[in-house]
Length: 488
Image 1: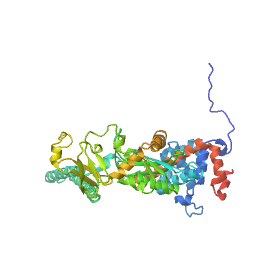
Image 2 (image 1 turned 135 degrees about the vertical axis):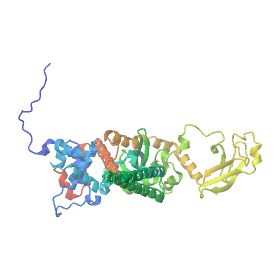
Image 3 (image 1 turned 180 degrees about the vertical axis):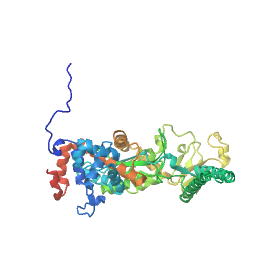
């Protein structure tokens, strides 16, 4: 069988213009058109061609580089630098501009507060294209490692252990210094011991400062590299990281809002995430849906008070095990008399409220009724008789559970996985997002917002195609003074 061989000495006639290297259907043209459509004044990036000083790289070109690079899993500044030299699509996108990795890293770091607003404009663009309705929103979260080692996480126990170890080390150094001072006065080994002592004193001072900060803010732990990062647990072990949040629209699964929170779980986050998404949409959604991790009665009630339907199952509903024989769910509640009735027909009336008004306690009128009951020992072992502890807003919890069980709510909840979990699968698997590159919560917010924009753009390409999207931009979306770009 014959083979085809390459020839590096073959003379070929390459196109003279870079424009000719990229076809009209190449996806890179969509990323180029998208960034050209952004309002940079709203992003907070000044475009001043008359700026005094050394020439700078065009901010639009730098944003294009980041958006396009992140869309294909190229996030490292050194890899982006390599791409603008060797990758035709990157060379075309940048117009042959070749910033080095320091320039790329500095631009990204100095614009963390502005890059996160790209998603807002992307979502508003999708609304104009009819891709986002904003009626039903799905929320989900995932843990992502921060650019800070778990070894830099300190708690009170670790501080106490280090201080004890340092004190012993300092005592050992002082003892050795005395011996050296007596025996080797004319040698320079004492200088090294004094330097070691100084280092231990400095470390001790730093540990004390960390301990003061823990006591001041009443925190369980703090990471000295990323103070806002929290300990996250996963199948890969414990790491310092953030709880990344996304809010997704039902129609085509476009991401509307993202966030990076310093929390270990999703409880009490749903209302704030939906409120932020509504601000981006410019209107209030009709339905908010999330998994059981978001179930918090007080937090969900904030959305209900805004006339937003909440579809979030409680932990009791998703548990495969039903309530045990004598759990409070087996007792019948009567709203009129504000009392519970046990399986044997005895009444438990309201007794008092504890825990700063958060819990209500119901007790049986006479302890003898329970002591004489055939279920005494199984239902309760207290001589005072059976008591029931409920939340003060128990009626809200029951209403939320009732709303979740409705057939219409079940139909919406069945869409949650494909709408809310799919974006994280794409971001983590296809875009290779295993850890944030930028330090701090603002950096994490910036990166997750940028990745969400990349996800949205890829879906736009799937729906409209390259030429179709650019045609949409040309016809109806851009102001007249900017349409000339899309008519080329």
